[in-house]
Image 1 (tube, rainbow, N blue to C red):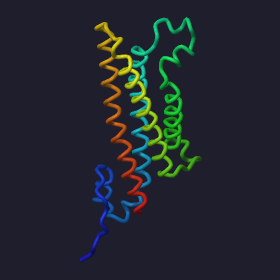
Image 2: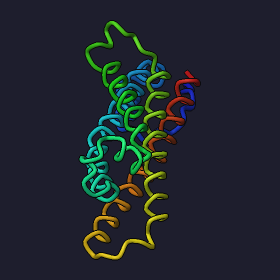
Image 3: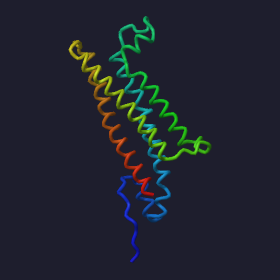
Image 4: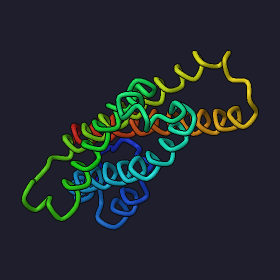
Length: 181
């Protein structure tokens, strides 16, 4: 009887389909492509949800009439804004490296997963910073409409924190799978 090598269980439907169709040795050849696909899908999720979560926090934390005082007033009110630049840069790099420019860039799957983890870490840090800022300002919040906006923004950030934790763990597991190849 022919023994097949043991593979770690990965909850990816594409990997299961590749194993069924090509067998274990040929399926391992798809590991880099599956890792690239995972990095791209995770990055797209962040780039789509980032502006949505950001708008809620902008409505909650932006000082009234900040435009009179210029961007420095906004930077002082929302200290997580520099993380947006880091996250957007990492996201654009992953999208470029997994799209058409990948023909010239030739990124490794490990590097793509590291950039995805960097993006997740930037989002997690930003969410924690604005949540801490909200908790710090909680005693001064008295009006009901502001309370509703606060709840929506906090819920969005906590949801994204859960997603980010899951994304980091999936990237770690995928990197381990690549190392086993």
